[in-house]
Length: 281
Image 1 (cartoon, rainbow, N blue to C red):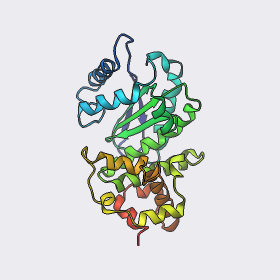
Image 2: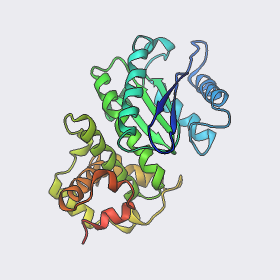
Image 3: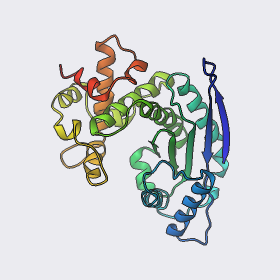
Image 4: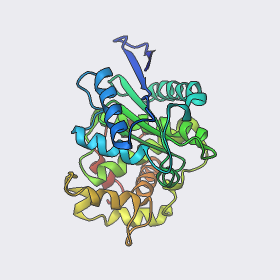
């Protein structure tokens, strides 16, 4: 595990640490045994922390599903790219931290993966933010173009941590807004083409959908029991296209930026439901 520091020149002279975690794998272990070994490594290096997961069982099931796939996983899968990955993580967090920041140190967990269907569906790199300080990256180095996807995923995911500094992700509309803020932050700082998950709907379609979001999306608290509802909004069902919620978030923030005097930075401090109401008035 590597630790680097970001020193921010401000009144408090705060220092942010970035802890980058790479697990070790044994070829002698089954996927389940290897997953338990990874979780033990996380607990050992981060004391009582279990990667911001609410329960250890969820971390175990998530890691086994995301890491292990079509063939054996080993330490060597990412060894040649390790320095590049570390540099991307350090540079990405540093750049976004100067724009919007979480007030926590950051733990970045990097895993090789051979779950090719999941990687390809998510766009070469499966990445997500959790809690106020944990970032996860699952990388299949055999998929062409993963380097650039990772470089652009890092600012997107760190922007989520900045959102979580101010508000919890309790409802579907919270996540819709957070996804929009994260992708606009990535575009603002890094440029690049619009992500595929932002283009599932046109601007017109998205604004129409936002005006008629049901109460289940705006009021229902997301729990483990209704987690499938959350997944349907973001990854699609027979009634909703893939990336539906991501696209809603992108065009929601786009519309607010173009029709108000609010800046992107200011939107991080406004309640998600209040941002939604700006397009429903």
